[in-house]
Image 1 (cartoon, rainbow, N blue to C red):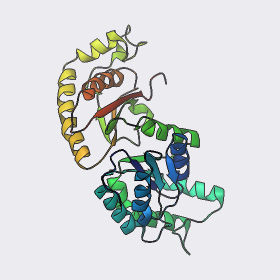
Image 2: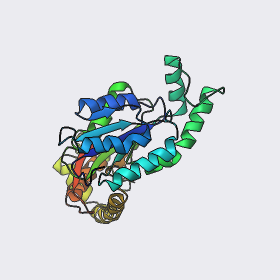
Image 3: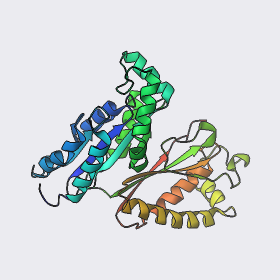
Amino acid sequence: MTGQTPGLQVVVVTGLSGAGRSTAAKCLEDLGWFVVDNLPPSLLPTMVDLGSRSQGAVGRIAVVVDVRSRGFSSDLRTGLEEIRRLGVHPRVLFLEAADDDLVRRFDSVRRPHPLQGDGRLVDGILRERELLRDLRGSADLVLDTTGLNVHELRAKVSIAFRETVGGAGLQLTVLSFGFKYGLPLDADLVADVRFLPNPHWVPELRPLTGRDATVRDYVLGRDGAREFLDCYTQLLRLVFAGYVREGKHYALLAVGCTGGKHRSVAMVEQLAERLVGLDPGEPVAVRVVHRDLGRE
């Protein structure tokens, strides 16, 4: 085995069968990653070692692993520990979906679940959830693909990984949303700014958005707005420093109001500016997404 391999990026793609691992792998391949599907977890250190010997020809490796591999849990845990000792800090992308969606997907392809044995399809799904529970909890990024089509899933993977080449260690997405359209299922942290007065009820502000200066000034001028930003930024400094220590490289921070048009948009824009200068122990890249802007 080689020594330190600081330039090599490694992503382990795993999760529930039927949740979209193959789609995610194809998207990463399109983004320029070297993708290996269904690699036995015990061979993960060997693959990383080969990548480190490629003299830069292979700089980003995505490995798809799943429960079809024998000794999945213990072998994967051991493999991840070994490549960390090589100086590579892998990211784990975990895909999941609701049981109903998984059942429909398996029915559509007329294939059994790899863990159902002589039981029902739902029995296999339940066994797999239990087997992957600890891995899901330690994943850097969990994507819930419930209700997503192939194109929507590819878009989410692309957003998460398209800018990682030579980029910051901690990739933050700060997302505004409207509670009336539902919580973002893949959010790591959710903040609620409905405690602020709603510009919707001010006639001259109603047609504008949180990107407009008059709405921004209105929102930031309300009691508690700037104090919230100050306190929340300090809290995030502690949280993100913990993410860095634990090797988590991606986080989605969601801020919601009623419709995702005024308060959450204005607060996300301000919060993103503060997070750009945050120093949790490694460089930070911040991306702003307004999920529901223009939806009404």
